[in-house]
Image (tube, rainbow, N blue to C red; front, side, top):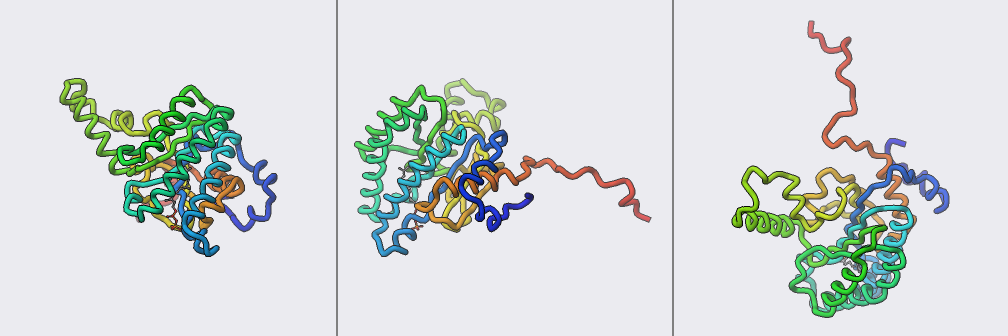
Length: 268
Ligand code: FPP
């Protein structure tokens, strides 16, 4: 299958989709821009927060599914730096959902041996959320079956700025020389330094933007864009995304084409 024939795959049951996933060619690191919660709620004449609440259930299901399937790292875009411009009531309720998620998931994360991490600039996050982040990060520190990273108050440009500042500080202190600054050094200073290379970026709800998410890391990632709204994105949708990924030929700038055949090209 060279391109994903979604119509054909949609005929398959969940069990059949599961068997089609090649566990030898899984993406190591999957990231998701979880979009469409508001539209999901609006289409049901419900308040936006109902969409976020349902979105949290998708988070739960996708975390467990990734762990079971064998994904090493899952990174979820939960709240961007730009999201601080949303109405304060929506921000407050989103933070409550975040706190509730952390409280309710700790045992499950430990049981599944999933390490929890956050990335972003935490300064503006409410104290109770910060306390729970600290608690869950500390409790799951030694878990090694999967890393779940939640991007909170996160911006990709901000992440690069923070990396630059850290490198300049090292330079100022004489720990880094100009010649030491290369891609690998920058990567070591990104929030994601502990994570494997990003292989697959999923965006839900039909939008086709990166929205300031993992700007550096996305360089060679495969993109899976789906019209499905995040609250409807469950295990079946994840399997479709993995199957889509497995149809891609990853070239990293190289070519898979052989050189021009000798018979072609001799200008007369
Ligand atoms: C984008 O949908 C979604 C968000 C800004 C929030 C995502 C948060 C969750 C899924 C809740 C819980 C998360 C965790 C990690 C526990 P939108 O509101 O922009 O939707 P719209 O584009 O349809 O309006």
